[in-house]
Amino acid sequence: MTERRPRADAARNREAVLAAADELFASSADPRAITMADIAVAAGVGKGTLFRGFGDRTGLIRTLYAARLEPLRRAVTDGPPPLGPDTPPLERAHALLDGLLCFKFDHRHLSLALEEAAAAGPYEAEHYAWWHGTLRDVLDRLPGFAEGGGSDFAAHALLSAVRADLVDHLAGREGLDRRELRAGLGGFVTRVLGAPSSADGAGPAEDAEAPS
Amino acid sequence: MTERRPRADAARNREAVLAAADELFASSADPRAITMADIAVAAGVGKGTLFRGFGDRTGLIRTLYAARLEPLRRAVTDGPPPLGPDTPPLERAHALLDGLLCFKFDHRHLSLALEEAAAAGPYEAEHYAWWHGTLRDVLDRLPGFAEGGGSDFAAHALLSAVRADLVDHLAGREGLDRRELRAGLGGFVTRVLGAPSSADGAGPAEDAEAPS
DNA sequence: TAGAATGCGGACCGACGGTCCGTTTCGATG
DNA sequence: CATCGAAACGGACCGTCGGTCCGCATTCTA
Image (cartoon, rainbow over all chains, first blue to last red; front, side, top):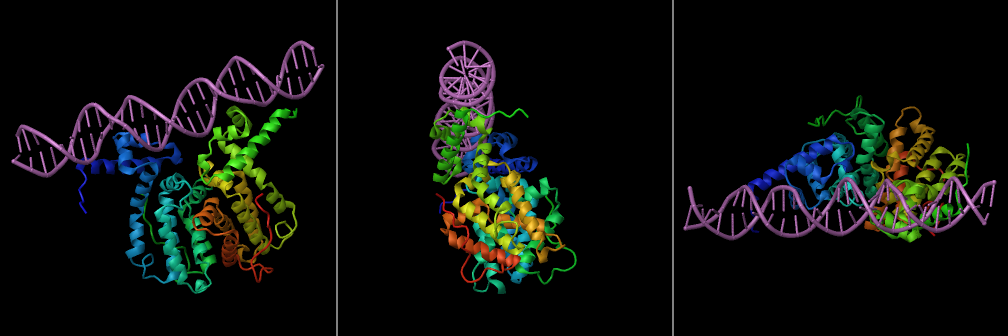
């Protein structure tokens, strides 16, 4: 338990690296074009600093992703409806997937970098296990999933519908905007789970967080 | 129009390379561990031959994948029900996804290699556009999709449920077998589209093709 | 069988992720 | 403020991999 505060320059460099990496990934369509040396130069540090601070490329991307995701994660674990735990299951399932879609859209290059950094897709990252567990638990509270099982696979399948490369493909290659994407996903989720009681008229309007 | 037959040794080498690559990918859990040099050695040819014949690593994997997929593709375009074009839409949608799942399961390492070879997931490969178009057309014949649209996104979402890395994760990390996977997918598809009229009692039994 | 065209193959190259270690900077201490 | 040990720095360096190149071998054609 001998916790030791990190040195001031170390903390400063860590932030500089995360900021530089965020900037670089956001500005490039292909995450593989961003090299560790690029990030080091942009952050004004040596390459060794990157690897000492984050282990390897995957570790750096995961750390950055986790930092950006944190607000959404807290909104899900502690926040008010429709994301928080006090929401009726059907509405919460919709909100979870919509929130995640928005996040992936707003940080789509970073998300893309994360998913292709890992060896076998995103499935070995801690984030994924958490999302899957959370969504499965919500589905289990739904009448349709009462006891027949299937919630485990359904959670995987629903999460796969918001995979970063799919979002990037639809947003980039096919030119869909945020609104169309959310409408498409919302329609699909409704098909799978049913319509949330509050959803009528126009599409959802929550979570208007801007990229910057 | 001056078609020229390839030289005999070239054709032989081409087959040797495809066979060697198939073998190597099938026997390794991580496709990235298979290098082009490995394949060249296993096939008994020089590295130059690989690149002349297939362009680059992605081209080789795509060619191999397309060759293995060909039977299924023909069954969908020309074959008898439940895969062929003369099948009622609801049953055909189920059969398409089940067939694709089985293929991905039986060739999961190769499929994994394909999906992580491309820059932005599988979405830029011709295969994907074909599957998506086919499935979308089938969905459009379904009452529920009559005119409301949504079939485009739904086709993407359903296909994402059989992505190679998800199949690999469920089969490998979670230890599900073919039967369980098919049951899970079948249940999900039923949730989205409804149950096919022929499905009752035990799960589907079609497409029992063995890996070797 | 001779000559041209086609394909072969492995030495070679540039780039990238990751390591190593001499040097610099921090901050606790008297 | 001066001193000193520890912590962090940074860029030269390394191994590997995808991809290229060109002198040589093999195959087809006449």
